[in-house]
Length: 419
Image (tube, rainbow, N blue to C red; front, side, top):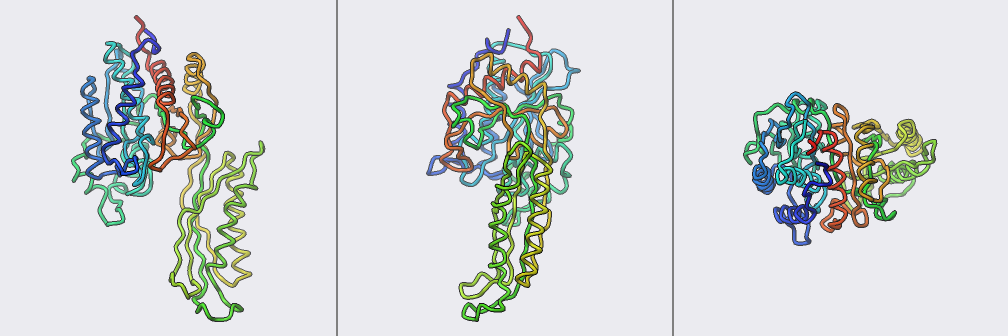
């Protein structure tokens, strides 16, 4: 038997996506299923019912990561895992994360229907708090499982209402006893996700094979000056906002002008701005903003950070303010596994799909997994590149193409038993 002969059902996958979307459904057609809320618990319970109906055995670890297991013929082989996340942004869509989980479920359903076996065991994972919308940072479940965070620090995290992650995990009934670090013993990890960009759609392609994750550096910038009445003379002001404005503009400038050897540009985002005292007729004394730099070239990424710091020093001197650029978080350039990449490419070619290699500029559970475990990602297009939005959409055909490549690559890795 080959994966192409399995009864993979694109329509069944689509129906499951639509049913899951009703849990936490929003008036505009999206999903609000933030982590460790009552609707997260409801979505988890539905996923549990679906998994157990096709013969899977569920374990839940101390961080709430859900891990279904399907035994293989050789229990000594390291399991092959498929996964993603069911949690969403407050105004999230139907597909971000959810597609990867439910496509993995469809692989398991098809194996169950066919009575098929693999040599290695298979796992299907729903990671806790990939989004980071309610509890920051994102990708907590996979990050802690891979040893990048401690369990204690994750369980102690609090949301804006002051509620602790660990307390909320217990409240909704989804804290298990399994050790999340056991997932470091996985033999391979595969994740299907919507692209969250326009490259595939614009190129008329069906599938993207993700070869690596871009390097990322986040900074926090604080500009401190002096309060001044809005009616006071402009001369002599130490206005933190007027000093911060060219620094904020520099983020875009540096992203567009700091090039890799192949000419690739960087990416820069200012996502949070806080102004003190935030009064209409007061020139601010303090401005805080976040900076998110990403690049395909780690050296170019470092130059972006250094240039921003140098620009802050120049503005400090010119405007008699104090502008401080502080590193907040860094994720290195992360390559995915060459053998898994080749299996995904081979599947897309064999099925006659239109595909390309591409990086991901966005963090995913697979990026943390790749630090410890051979991993790969598969992208399907999404309309307009729109994501983290209730209007996020894909076609059933795109979902099916991603499902097929995911199944082929995962089952080739696990050793689908021939008949």
